[in-house]
Image 1 (cartoon, rainbow, N blue to C red):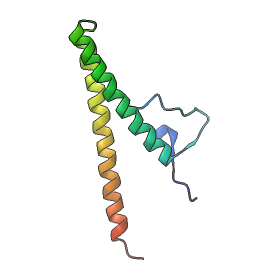
Image 2: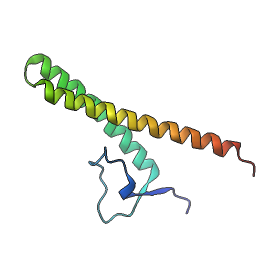
Image 3: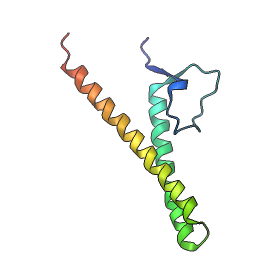
Image 4: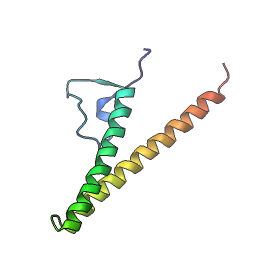
Length: 97
């Protein structure tokens, strides 16, 4: 029980592209965090590409706004996760053993 694992069905719904098979019950916490950060970064890059396409006339405003919304929500979820993790860390550090 040294490894921290989470249930795959409790993963962020914003990261459906995660490379987790349906048969896999647990995911390494470190891998989960790395994947979430990578996906958030990728969504930010996709939003930037969508803006460039719109500026060139290759994409419409709806597609661009959709990509921007995905990137915004993804970043907000990751930020919430970071905040909760920091709060948990502070609580653990205040515990006496």
